[in-house]
Length: 381
Image (cartoon, rainbow, N blue to C red; front, side, top):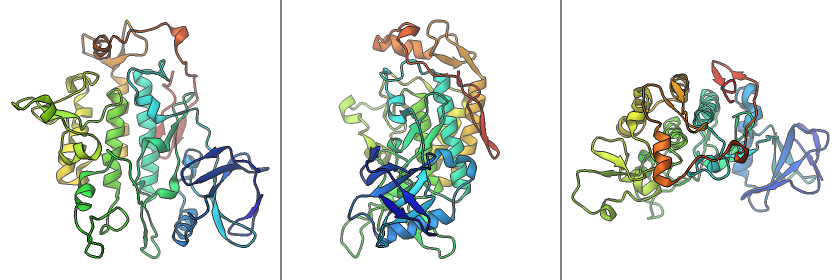
């Protein structure tokens, strides 16, 4: 199959896709192994999407992270000049973020706590570059984040859904979806309002701007970091320990419901419902303070939420304060603690350490850096 780019460049793509998603199919390109083509399914190629992608092609983020972000590099058309999709970097990752969260671990049993912190750092590094370029993700779904388990690099897909503002015209091309449980409370509140034109509640597509912002991204980023630290559990699964109500009545709910109810587990008087979540006293005060800014202060003033750069620096400090568990080689914990908190959690779940030969191992890697924020691979092993 042959498609034409914006400037007339010809792209010959393979006849069969190597990947499929909800919006389209991904094809290899002959004589361009470092790139691939996303071809949308019939009926999804709107004029609005085409214009949005053109704005993205004209305003790429820093070149140093393009190998980790499926950013549109060119728009492609059929021989009859119909918009069909776009060209993007071909990103090779060996894993996904969702299985990294699982506890007890199933797919990545050899992944260490330190490596989870490095993954969190590398997510922050990419977000810092995107935010510096004026890009808002909007849908910060874990399904759109890949992880190279050999290096700790992360990769972001589904960039066509990003919340993009054309700085020349002022037009905003909206993110119209967001993964449940990662939507910031101020946006949930806005969508509770009624659209006078439809008589229905606002959606991300028609709510008054601004909807998604860097601050809503920072909310979702803090949730990802919490999950990477706390065995995959959301911070919004807390209960009031001083309440006389039954556990079932006090249950926080799931996803956006728990966010709306403000069930943040580190609030004064609250504890997390899951025994797989360690006490906040097992974390550095700097990390707990950033979580509180993201979920307590940020609820009042979203601009109080920590930026990706702040998180990156704090995670580096945390990594430097780790000590190795004497029982389980995948466990590291804060210096000064007398007991490994992860071993204590494993005992509650009867999740005993198994031999190294049974683990999925990761390989040593080489360092990569981007402007002012390092992608951490030095400490991967």
